[in-house]
Image 1 (cartoon, rainbow, N blue to C red):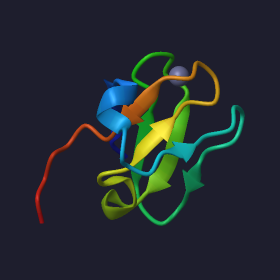
Image 2 (image 1 turned 60 degrees about the horizontal axis):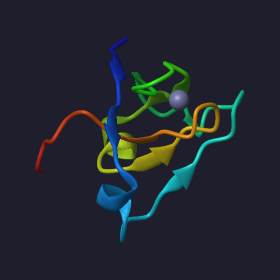
Image 3 (image 1 turned 120 degrees about the vertical axis):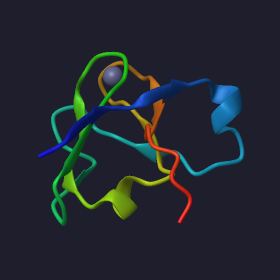
Image 4 (image 1 turned 135 degrees about the vertical axis):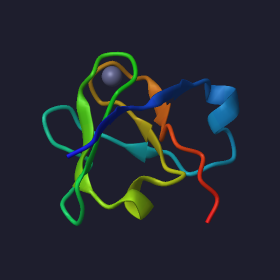
Length: 77
Ligand SMILES: [Zn+2]
């Protein structure tokens, strides 16, 4: 199953978007697909076995290191 490191963004880049708060020790989302996404700074798994559309465009604040992450693909459906 594919695993991706997410892209780090700045608070300025996240401004105006919904930011999902991850809690350390628990994936923010799990199930529904086969793609796993890790924090681009500390490699904590944030989204586990999710469908691509569940990761597309999301911004996740890592509960371990506090980094703001977004998904690495920039597909436009
Ligand atoms: Zn992190």
